[in-house]
Every structure is written in structure tokens, then in C-alpha cells.
Image 1 (cartoon, rainbow, N blue to C red):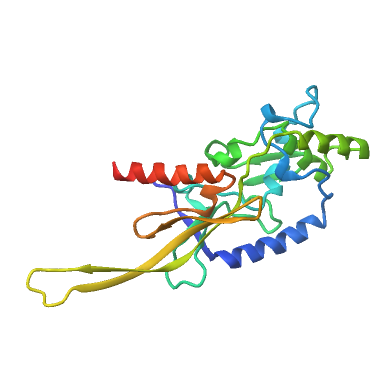
Image 2 (image 1 turned 135 degrees about the horizontal axis):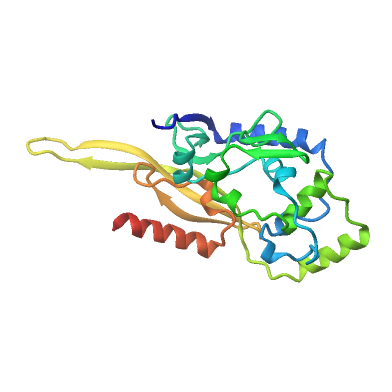
Amino acid sequence: MEKPVSITRIRRDEFYQDLVERNVQKKKLLNEPQLPLLDLSKYVSERVVTPADAAQPECVTCGVCCAYALFVPVTREESERLGTYVELTLDDSDAEIPIDRVLPRQENGNCSHLNGTLGDHVECSIYHERPQVCHDFDAGSDRCHEYRRIYGLEPQLTESEVAAAIRSLERVEKKERILEARIVEAGTLTSYSFSFGDEEAVTTQSILLKIVVFLEDETSHEIHRFDPAEEIWFETDFVPLTLAEARELIASRRTQELI
């Protein structure tokens, strides 16, 4: 028996407005981050501020990484496997053009697949099918421990520890990464088709889209234009890649589709 599909479609700006409101409510209940989250790696192998002898947290008695992130993207392949997702569509367009897919959230902002009580015992109802972004998050990473401090599961750092941690982070070589990608309309495509004996060509028009990315240095770059009837791209395909990696991704996928 095929798995039932449950898709909730929502315009991008409407979704992000709801996200902002949920984030405001969530922060009222949490500690402020002491360290810049974007600078903290989610991999244990890249730890900079966590002591080497620090104990690795037990995921089943924690769960805060599944609760803190309000936005968990899923790829096309992952969404088809999961069968339940929220699909974000292009703003200001009559056509429901998908530009991202994400895991649904509960009213409290937690992932809808997270069951149990944070800091006590939790379970993931899609653990063996969870998205790659969830696979990639290591228990015991710098970001893991910061999340736990935010939720009060670990003691806050002292002022001297914060200062030392920031100095350590400043010594790490940083790549200029994409913070945000936007898919927007770039105009219309006009195509013509002819049939034998027709006096005039049949003219059709479709939407042309473009992908614009925004880097950490606050510059923006248009990296691709495409026909959504021919190509499907999600905004989160490009975060947090570098500009070169994003362009390589586009080139490699287009090459594969031509084979």
C-alpha cells in the first residue's frame, strides 16, 4: 500500500511571517544565545569552543535541536519519501509554483515528528527516514551545546568563557557563504509552435524565474534563470553554499538532466 501524501501549500511570504511570529513567542521562553549560532559548526569534527573531554549528550533525553529550528528544509526526493510536508509557493503568482519544501511544525513550533518532553525523553517518528539536514547534526557539536544552554539543559558560560570562545571562533577561517536565496519572477517566456497547414503560429507564454542569492558580505548575485516547467529549484538548495558551489550545483544538475 502506498503511503498517503499530505501536502500543505502556502505562499512564501505568508509562511515567513508566521515563522517570525512563532520565533518571537519561542524566544520569550528561552535563554538568549551566548555565542553566534551561525559561526558554530554542527559537526563534532569541527568543534572549536567545546572541550575535547566534554560528555556527549544523549539525544533521546534532549531533543532541543528538533525544537529550536523552525525551518527544516527537505529535498524533492526526501519529501516524496516522507509524504507529508509544507510546500512554499511563489508570491504574487496565480500559478502554484513550488520554491521550497519544509517539515511541518506543531503549534508550539516544535517539529511535528517530535514526540515526548524536551530534556526528559523524546522520539522522532520519522527517525529512519529523517531528512539529510537532520542526519548531519552531530550530538556534542558546538551548536548542539549552545542549543542546550539556550534551553537550560546545560549551565550558561561565564563571561570569561564567552570571551575565550569568541576569540577561538574568530581564528577560524570563514568561507563567504550564502545566507539566503530568493526565487522571483524575471519576466515571461514566449514560445511558438507551428503545425502543417496552419496560417499562424500558436503562441504561448509562461513565467520565467530567476535565483538571487545573498552573501554574508551583504552583496546579492543573480545566479540562474529558468523555466519552472522545465526545471525545479528550491531556495534552500543553495544555503549555506558558497557562490562557486551554488553555480557548480546548477551546472552539474543541468548536465545530468541532459544525459
